[in-house]
Length: 429
Image 1 (cartoon, rainbow, N blue to C red):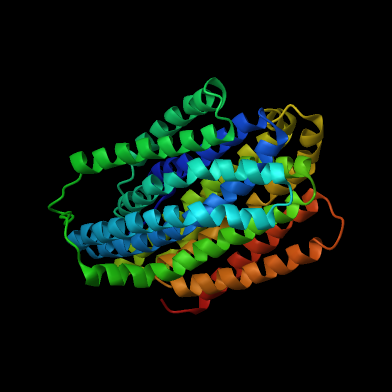
Image 2 (image 1 turned 90 degrees about the vertical axis):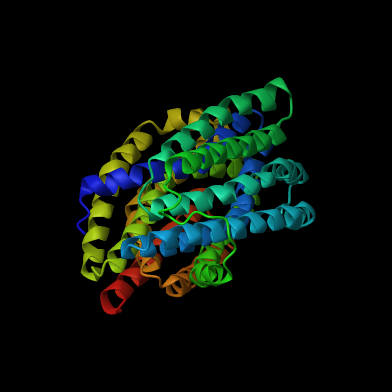
């Protein structure tokens, strides 16, 4: 089983487009809200990351589901892949409903205790009121995506991504400005876009997938669900703890003032474009690693990671150079405020350079996850986050710039990659 650059890219491209759904939704929200006000733009950062805190357990479960599907696909046990999908779909739908119900009373309480500005806190709560219901659509979408990535038939993800973008952009304009819903309009438009993406992917699966071959029959199977949960539990913890410190990062930045918080959201928003590349390539790495191990070709894991990283640099570094060259124009898309634009400049450059380290860090960590060692990957993430939070806590005691705050990302991805490489070199899997 030899994965060439071309085959990796053909598998990855639809994954990239599907990851782009969630990120383009956030980018669109930030661009529109940047022209509403600094408080709304800053609030979207805090509320958006808090939404990710709720979203990431489902995302983590989908990674474990993807590992199980890919392993069974590599072994040629195709009917088992569909069984895993249906149990995962049931679990994720129930989890989404539970999180929506819990978020309504708890999110305002938590945000109220952490955010110092009453105006920012009120705007963040308004955003979450409309945004959290998107979990009911994004979680089932994650299950379907995990299945299609696991069986390496990812072409339908492109159409789903395009559908979400085409719905979200006019939806933002209509709800925010025409119907005067403000920040809550951005959230509602995003949730509707996720519903349309789910409908598109579901229609494809029903029409184009051989349901008999892949065992797609509605039936609860507790043993399959327990196996998926055992594989997924650590990737759920891993995904959650990877975002929770990011939320604390924005809580720390919020204390610098509304302009600094708004600037941080601009930098975060642009960084998500590069996160799309990193995340899609790492997800592809995890799936292909599982397929390699399922086919008995463990020695192909390191060569696979090397090809993925080189491919990621070929795609991402030219884009980073362009963004750095035209950074004033990019920042200008988000804000008309000279103070916010000036504050965003230095951390913008720091963020772009981090791509050099983030790509290998996440690719090697996803290879560890793809071997089935999800508990080990979680432990790597936990130790790295402990160092991240310690560094962030130290910075909060000094009067440092936003750009210096952003350097904590370097510490995170380098620590993650180093531990993963050592594991892959010295552990039998």
